[in-house]
Length: 165
Image 1: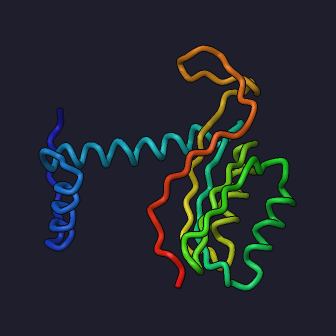
Image 2 (image 1 turned 180 degrees about the vertical axis):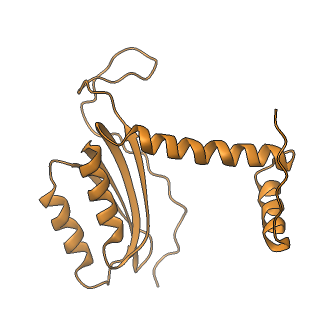
């Protein structure tokens, strides 16, 4: 094992110590190791899936009053129907919507589509989670017996909302 010494501004060190307590790490070293593993893993995954097939989960929020945004997002998905698998639309409150779109296809095209969706003018917060898939389509393994999905499986649990006034 190697020892590293780093210097942090006081404000960053305080925020980091608060983060360590919040995530219940025993010490700073464990927290730093996990952060490094996660970041290096993300980078390696990005390099690993530079080509080939992938699936992506694209989640984003937006104000549905934003001029033409809902229509633009829908039209863009129709234009890329070969990538769009499914979209879940949730009304968070009277103004805000959350959409989660699943994409599948060649990494470059999926990444471009996903990043374009969250870069759309009016999208407030967006995140893309890209996962490589094996070349054999139609078969997947979860460590249990083979089975086929006859339909979509959706489990959604959201916090209770206040009743409209």
